[in-house]
Length: 439
Image (tube, rainbow, N blue to C red):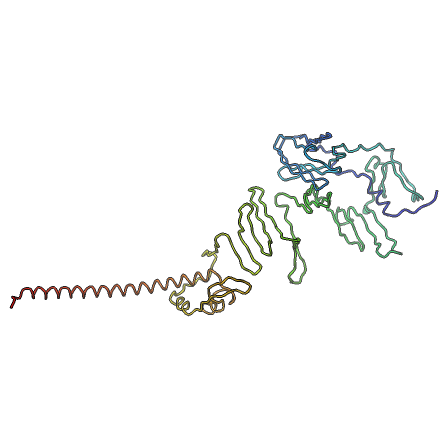
């Protein structure tokens, strides 16, 4: 027979194409799967409880449905047109995954997975070196490594048993194609951990799976959807967790201080970032619309906050600022008359802000800061400072008005006394004149 050299990728396909035994196989699942051509039922095998069923499949199909306690979850192919292919499912109770698996659809109907064909007994190859000058076909189990023995009969289709050397290596010749580098599939990293690694050129570890990673830690589904914590991702990236285990951390570890973009959203048009409280049904959207940043509550029909590109801010409600005494220190009383005097000398103008069209009235920040010494700088005026200056001025005016009113009241009292005396004098004169005989 003619001797032929097979490329290394063909050996990889042969090895990875063999079925591997899943960890935990043989355990009784919480629900028994009953498959019919047009319907799939999950029959509880323990105490009935409410569950949530999630199904993802070809054609961007994603189904999420809740079932009450005692109501068996089901999936009916007659409810929608199903594309042929593999569908992943999850059963969740109280947010936690309790069972996962796959369904097969062919010609629009559910089918049972094909049973494995029987295999001939395992044969033990004991020769130190065996060279196969042609294709290799194994119709049974295979064990590779120094620790293989008869105890491995009827085990996994392919086993690697050699202490400290659980790896499949892709050697690179590097003689003629400079982009060829060695790669290793490494399990049980020697002296470090029981992790599974893909080791690259220079022994770097670009991909690592911890031995105790939970179910469905990472899933790539049909259409390219990626799931973290779910085997049924509904979007390009779908992260699922419970009890605070869904936090996302993006960390820049450079020792140098610099402005860096850590998160970026891009769209050929307006953009929305939604916040949805599934317990209350309340949803807010942070939107970039027509160049403005808007906060909109779903169903409210108004834009709560509108931040324009030129810095103008419009709110639909009332601006409420903190002025709690317990949040302040270095509290010093002011002299209202002194404040009023500064207000009387403060230049007030009408003006149009650069880039705007509306006319406004008020002081310049530089004049305000020079007069009162308030604020973080001389380019901005806090509205609470404006309100404080106005209130102090009102107090000073009120005090002045009280003084003037009291002075006027005293004057009025003096005038009233004098008028009363004059009236008595006039009355006396008239009486005396009346008593005189006519000439």
